[in-house]
Length: 116
Ligand SMILES: [Zn+2]
Image 1: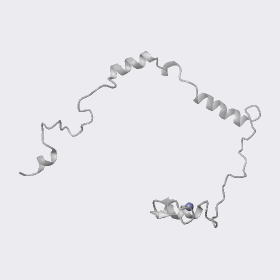
Image 2: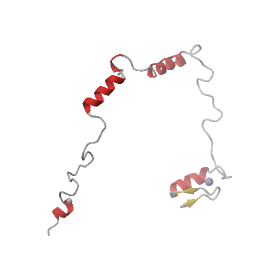
Image 3: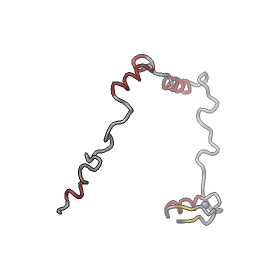
Image 4: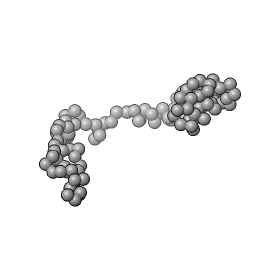
């Protein structure tokens, strides 16, 4: 465990420790400059009425958030029927058993391979 000399934070690796200590908020000698502080976003103050780019991405977002209609939209009944046809849910015996070994009827593979 590596501990920051400035704030006492515990770091898991020497790399994270070095990276943290260099930019630790309590490090008096840190050289850190935010790249976004003092800058203004390109679309600040613009609306779909005043800027075509803002209007364009607004339309794209509206399209993406539109609920599915037509062939893609299933009713609750359609979903129920599809689930019943395809057998969703419920108990299936040995569904997670890929080795083919079932509850103690055959010995484990390791003992089968070992000479007795
Ligand atoms: Zn620190």
